[in-house]
Image (cartoon, rainbow, N blue to C red; front, side, top):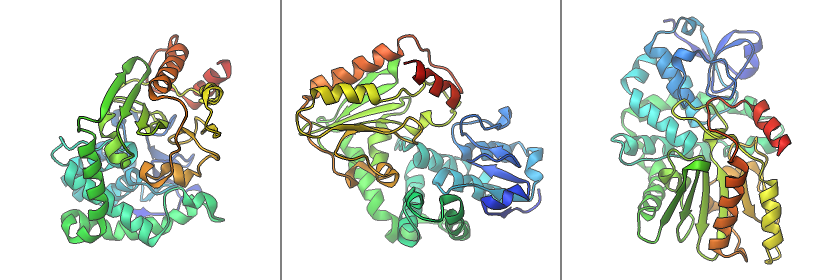
Length: 353
């Protein structure tokens, strides 16, 4: 297999490339995005896992000399890095898979033997990304958009990652604060004052815990579910669709996303705090329904719940839970989970609602 080169996404129109965690008409796509024409033999839940399958199978399309992606995130980066460093990637295959799951789905599972090492590497990337560049989705607010700005991130991390992979503890100063925050939150998720209620028929898990925690800790209890209702003390709530329904996953069928507008309207009828319930579009990566004067920016929505203010609602927790569960039970009653919902199908379904 010939050595590969990362190129900016804008160059793919003139240079046929392996496109990771993105789509492009002039590319061979290794992506879990909805509708991406990823070869069936290598499909998986994350784009990084798709790339690792392709490397393991020595897929003929990998002979292309160029690799690209239209954004920087951990899943996409791991896939790009693996294509540029195939032998090292296959040597650390399971560790890289864990990094992609933590980075994309935020499902941190300490029962996995490599979860701790994967968390260090993910948090090192997070820390360096914040320190040297810009937060995820912050490019939305800039004149130069993500596809162009992310090149500087790829340049840095493609150069540095291999050495950190060999010994993450050399970079302890970068990752230890966030790792500590995740582990403290993970411990909270298993304390007696954290109550978990599961509604598998609607893909909803309810986590009632005293205070917000890091996403990797909060979602550590959510494997197999696609919606998370977090209920904190003082009637503070957030409902979120996970990224698992923005992409095509192969490990299990899913229900399509439903517009949160009618649920927000119902909660606003009940709310007497003076604030209003707001919601994101179903096409956002992780749409939130929450109480607040204004909708969050995409960067704020992506950031951890500990980094944003969550307001006290007048709706008691038992009533709030009942409203959410009843809404989705009613609206999902005639829909069966399945694989590979297209965005057109999801949007058409919501037009009929």
